[in-house]
Structures are given as structure tokens and as C-alpha cells.
Image (tube, rainbow over all chains, first blue to last red):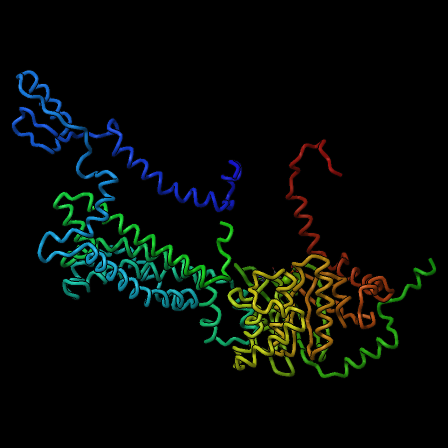
Length: 321
Length: 306
Ligand SMILES: Nc1ncnc2c1ncn2[C@@H]1O[C@H](COP(=O)(O)OP(=O)(O)OP(=O)(O)O)[C@@H](O)[C@H]1O
Ligand SMILES: [Mg+2]
């Protein structure tokens, strides 16, 4: 892999460099995080007290700003008292990687702090269900409607102008309304995800469907294909892979509405877990939960990508990438 | 000199060829086109693509349509296919007026239009299935058709795995599987290299000989037209009009060596005359004059290539 080729438009990568770059894309941010966490002279604006010395309000393990600590050291020296000691640290909201990794394990094994609380895996499961139902309902309407809009101009003109308008209305704004109509449990949460996804979905799928190669339709017509056969025999099979790709992107979209959706009515799912942990200043757990969402999303996408490849072996788009 | 003066005309036909044409004209008329006109209007500008085109083809005739670029060949064949509607005039297939596309007219396009999501076999089965043939029946027929063009081995391949020539062969049998009365072909070999093209021509004649099909074949390659056709419909551009219907005097069966035969050369001369005649190109020359004027010199005046 020469340098010249690296910056050639859409030049394919060798399998080794593909893997290398993919590893790098995770390793680089991790490296920055490690540096900030473990190299004492990078940032570290706080000090964790290990020996309070003569300072009355210091306690073992207390986290104080560095200036405060330095001032107390000077005061202690001048007054001849015991000098406090400690080591540099980052603020409590930035835990080190090893703490988060530990939390990834312990957050699953720690029982809930309150009696009616939920275990992490229970919270996650709740979130996944919300996403699943929200995205499923949205897709059941959005995909067929999008395809119809892309195929028939009349349907497109009666659907898309309103959809264009509606997609600019912020989904969370419908929160109160959704609660009033659907109660305080999962109903309104699913509704927010549907509202957030559906209108984009109709437009995206319609645009994709419109990219259908028209000569294929003409060829089908000359073969005696009747109008009612055109959609199931030509339009849908031709656009399947592209629509599948759209769905992967739209699923990511649905995830971004999750946090808002879960704050509506009774807070629930992973959002509830995160807010609880933050309240107890349990930041490693907060990060662990966020990372778990990321892993969940990425894994789903990878599985879908693999599935797409298996389902549409004939599809050549993006082959040279 | 003497020989040149008495060089044979394209109108001279040997007894065998004349007899063939007599037999051809006795067969019933399959496709008849009467006073066909087509005017496109776009952005307030009107283009007369076809003016008063009339002709008829008989059953099992091989008709080629030639003409320079933009003379309305594609427009004509698309009207015959029912993909475009004429402004006036009528098209009759076996006496019935054409109203939209139908399985009685198959079509092969210049661009590859195999359905990429279907295997070669399923592509050929497509027409049969949309016309309510049973699956196993359709499959059996598709395999027979693929055998005819020597592509049985590729029955389960996808179109992207085929070469351009193979794709067009599949496209031809996909159209033929429907057993149309007329096969319409719009420069089907235009994108192929010379060698593949020659093979495809031989292939097409072979298929045509074996089945009951009337072919309307569009091309702008004069040799291709002479090699394939019984008769050649010559169009002129701006607007597209019929100049002549030529009966090709080259005897059948055709083979590549005939390219240097007297009949072939005579026909070729006539086509050259018609296609490159200065009078029929007034519009083109106007265009070209415009092109010369618009193209400023972009190189150093001393840097000449001619
Ligand atoms: N959809 C259209 N709208 C407006 N004008 C058109 C349209 N289709 C074709 N024309 C015009 O009709 C004329 C004939 O076009 P056509 O495509 O039939 O030519 P052609 O003989 O097939 O040319 P070529 O050999 O380059 O394929 C051209 O002048 C073209 O500009
Ligand atoms: Mg054309």
C-alpha cells in the first residue's frame, strides 16, 4: 500500500490495511483517553488526599482542586502543622479506562440501590424493546408508504409535502401529548420513536425508490408485465438492497430518539439507569452504560450488514469500496 | 474503367434472390406502419422526430432500419414497442392496432436491461411467469432457450457475472421465450467490440432461421444492416423520413466472406450515397458549421497536428 494509492479516490484497501485502519479507529480515541487518565502531567486539575495532615476539613480519599490543596500545604508549612499529602487526579466525571472496564463487569453484578430499582440488564432489555417496537411500527408504515411514493407520482404528491412539513416538528415536543393519550408507561415512548423516525423514513425510502433504473421497468413492460405486477415483480426486488441499507441508517436514527423517549412519563430503561448512577456520582457506571449502548448499536449494524450481504449476493453497489 | 461503368447495381437480383423475395412477399403482413408522425415538444420547442413513415413487414422477415444519429430510429422502435405514443398514424400488428407494450412484441435494448436480482434462468422465465405460465413449465422452456444460445452452463449465474455479449444473448432469449410475433432490437450490439459483434450477428441469424419470428433491427452500422437484413429501411434526419426501402440482393445463407461480394459492395455503395448524401444533411452541416465557429483555438498557433 503506497502513499500515492492511499489518497486515490475510492481506491480499494488490502485486507490487512482494512483491518489495521478499523483497529486504529478505535485505538486512537482510546489512546487519547489513556493519556489523559494515566499521564499525571496531562490535565489532572484535582488532587486526591491520601493523608489529611493538619488540615481539619481534609479527609482521606477527598478530591479537592489543586489550588486549594497547594494553598493548604503552604498554610500547614507556615503554621508548622503536619503537611497533607495526595496525588494528582482528574475530576470525578472522567474515570480512567480501567475503572470503566471494571464497571462494565460490576454494573451487571451490582444489585439495584433501591428496592423498586432494576438491574442493568433489565434496564437494557426495556430499552431494546422500546426501540424494537418503535422501529417496527415506523417501518410497517414507512417502508410500504415510501415505496408507493417512489413508484407513483400521485401518492407522492399527496403524501410528501405534508411529510416534509411534519419532519421539522421536533419529536420530543409531542411528549406531553403522547403521555396524555397513551399513558405513562411504554406507549408514549414508542410513539416518540415512531414520530422521530417515520417521517424521515417515508422521504428517504421514497427517494431511494425513485433511483430505480427506468429501462428495467420498460423491459418488464415489453415482456408483458401488467401494472399490478410491476411493484412486486420489479420495483421492490430491484430496490431491496438499497432500502435495506436505508433501514440500517434509520435504525441508528431511532436509537438517538431513545434517550428523549425514555425521559417521558416514568423514566425507564437505560436512561433511568444512567440518571440514577449519575445521581450517586457513580460515573464509571454511567460510562459503562453508554459504551454498552454503543456496542449494542454497532453489533446490530454489523449483523444487519452481514445479513444484507448474504441476502443480496447480486448487489454490486459499493463493491470497489 | 469499362468494368467500373458496368459495375452491378444493388437493384440487380439473382434468380434465387428474386424468388426468395417473391416468397417473402407472399407471406402475410405481420407489422404494418401507416403515416406515422411523432412530434416531441419540450420547453416550448417542437422536434419533429418522425414524419409520415409508412412500411410493412412480412412474417419471418428480417428488417433493418438505418439512418444517422438523431434521425428517429429509437423513437420509431419505441413506438412499435408501445413505450412511446405516436402523434398521429397507426401501427398494426397482425391487423390489431398497438396500444401500449404487449407480449406480442419483444424488445432488446442497447443498454443492458437484464434484471440484476434474478439469475439468468429466472430472467428468461420472467416473461412466461408474468403471463401466468406454471413455474416448472416456464423453467423447462427457459432451459431450452438457454441451450439454443449455448448458455446452459450459466443458468444459475447472475447477470453481473456475464460478459456484454452473453448479457445480450440472454436478453434476446428472454424476449423470445414469450413467443412474440415481432422482435424489436434497438442497436443491441452497439456496445460490443467488433469480434463479439460478428459472433452475435451470426448467432442472431441462426436463431432467426430456427424459429417463426419477424425481426426489426435498428443499427447505424451499414455492414451490419446488409449482413443481417432481407430489406433495409433507410431514414433521413430532421425530420425522420423514409428515403428508401432497399431489398438486399446478397443471397442467403449469409457468411462473412460475402462482405467482398459484388452484391454486397453495390448495396454498400448505395447506402453510403443515401446516408452521406449532402442534400439530406443540410441540418447537420449547419450544426457542424456552428461547432467550428464555437470552437476557439486552444493551442499555440505554431503547435499544429495536421
Ligand atoms: N423524449 C424526447 N423529448 C424530446 N425530444 C426527443 C425525445 N426523444 C428523442 N427526441 C428527439 O427526437 C429525435 C430522434 O431521436 P432518436 O433517439 O429516435 O434518434 P436515433 O435515430 O435513435 O439516434 P441515435 O442513433 O443517436 O440513437 C432527436 O432529434 C431527439 O433529439
Ligand atoms: Mg437510438
